[in-house]
Image (cartoon, one colour):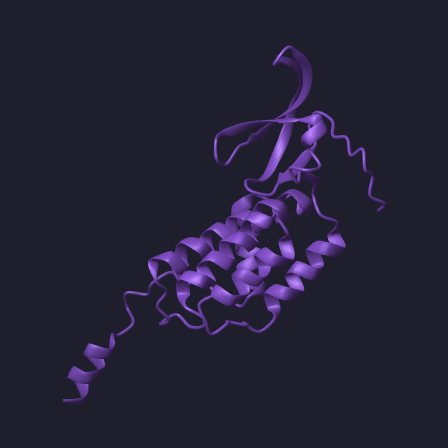
Length: 189
């Protein structure tokens, strides 16, 4: 796919704004700003219940882009499956770097954040800020993955976590007829 310097979007297109993720062009309007007629993309971000107006002439410099290609998303998925690469620096510095990667809008960079912050076991504890950054990265990547693959965001999140080897244990039914560890100990004693 060749890059077009005069990137144009039309009503109904899904776009990615780096700091907010996937949105949809609701309309393209002209408004009088400072005595000049300015054409604006009106973008809605359904998940955040937010609307953003971006001047057409500033769209490229603001980082507004189309959804990534399936090849680029495959690169992100490959990154998710890789081994975590956690730098040995203070958490505050890493958190700052993770936020920058999330706000870059690059799916591979976001996948790196997810890969590095995923829980290794069910017992692994994450701090509140780790969970918040992980969740923000998951939501951001899942929205674009969902838009590309015509899935719900929840379905996309589940698939992405599945690719990372994260099993959702909360959905498993509990069999109340099974003896607990305490019951087993009582029988032995």
